[in-house]
Amino acid sequence: MASTNGVEIAVHELGGAGPPLVIAHASGFCGSMYAPLAAELLEHFRVVALDFRGHGDSTAPTDEDFAWGGMADDLFAVVAALEAGPVHAFGHSLGGATILRAELTRPGTIRSAFLFEPIVIPDEYAAGGPNVMAEAARVRRPSFASRAEALWRYASRPPLSQMRADALTAYVEHGFADEPDGSVRLKCRPEHEARVFESDTKLTVSDMCGLRLPAVIAVGHDEPGPNPAGFASALAAMLPDARRIEYPHVGHFGPLEDPISIGRDVLAHALATSH
Image (cartoon, rainbow, N blue to C red; front, side, top):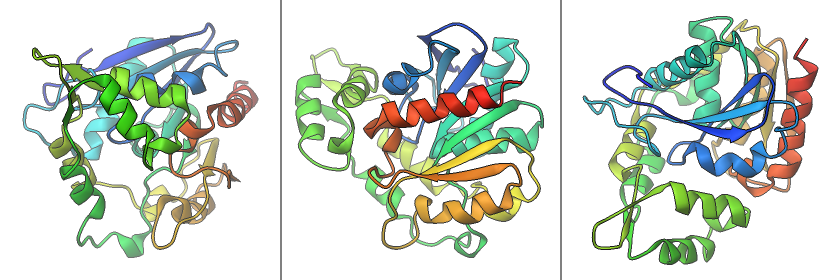
């Protein structure tokens, strides 16, 4: 379906019946790799997952502008196509921040949100500076001789090795495109992922002041230095209808490390806010 900046958004039906629940992925990933988490929701919800612009099977913006407001436009396009009014949503990292931005921009878009380490920056860190995530994205290996080689490499070293096997396999299956010579390349180009990280359009905690949205702010174990898990307390305190949950046995990729535990909590929150 069409979004802004010439983008065509891919949406994946992950199954289920009932009211829609939309999954919004983390930067560099794609919607289909959240199928293990979606499996916990299918008895009660129709689960769909989008690929943000420049990710998965969606196209990149024609101007190669990866401002985070464009991700909200992608989400708006999906919600409009569902024709179901406010939707329940699960967001991971970039996806979580996008859900919050969507509700800020158009109140009533989201019925409830379960957000795992959404990227909402405390104001004291918003001044900018060197972006280590962008630097790391630019040097990512963009292609492999085969999917088997990609899977072996990712499974043999962190952080992707921390994912559950089926989530990692789905990433290799759906996050790579086939080349004529039999090799595979990342669908989300390293340069595009770097531009997502470098964008100066991220939300800050103060932007969230007074936002009324039934939300769970979920975090994995804390890491040294500024990080999304550490930002979550200030964010949850700013949202009057939010609560914070900790999963100390997982890291930032928690929904892909333990999709059963987190998926069950997503389900409980969505059901509790359905009436």
